[in-house]
Length: 253
Image 1 (tube, one colour):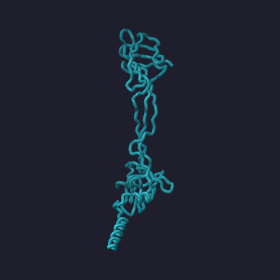
Image 2 (image 1 turned 135 degrees about the vertical axis):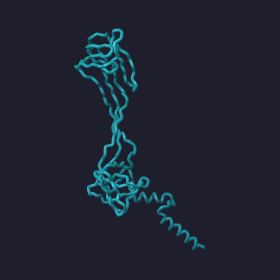
Image 3 (image 1 turned 60 degrees about the vertical axis):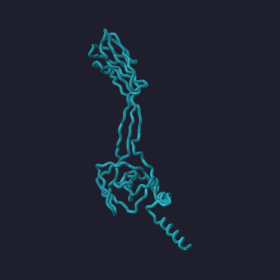
Image 4 (image 1 turned 180 degrees about the vertical axis):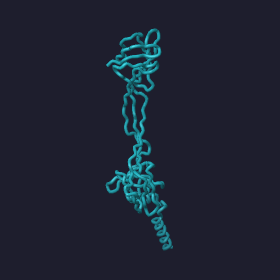
């Protein structure tokens, strides 16, 4: 009886050691993966904010006669926030393949590949380029040259395959692709002065103040309808001619 129990115990232990695809003890496969794999530093898959800056936009033209129709700006100075977003993409420098004893992997120069992350092998950083097969990837160095082996992503680790890959043509490599976009906010500071015609023998303007608001605060201001010098927001404006349809003026510096 004891011999039978011992044989059953040995069979169970052997089964544990042979069970490559079955996670019998839960942590056993994780330990093997950590021992054989390389820790992955994953990249953000969404857009990354690269830069955020303030941009000023003005329409000032000093010492130059200008004519503006009713409803359009005579003075404008607005401050916007501009955000630059980007993603990590690469593209082959030419059509090519990675040859291997198995099926070759084709790369098209017309296709972009989103980088997954990076690992470190012997002190060298390699980035992961996705394969057509899920959870598999190829490696490129900082110059875009292919590493001789690919691998599989298992959790947070990258396991190298046994087979080698050879790029064809030999100078096949990946190049950086600048995929970025800019997003501009509504005005966060500044002002806008629009011409509002002539009423009751006065020249009227609509003043929009964007200080601390993205919608603007309205105010109507007026001056006597006659040629001469007026000042708005510290800027001197000489009115040359004005009627209910348009105004001709010059900003003085």
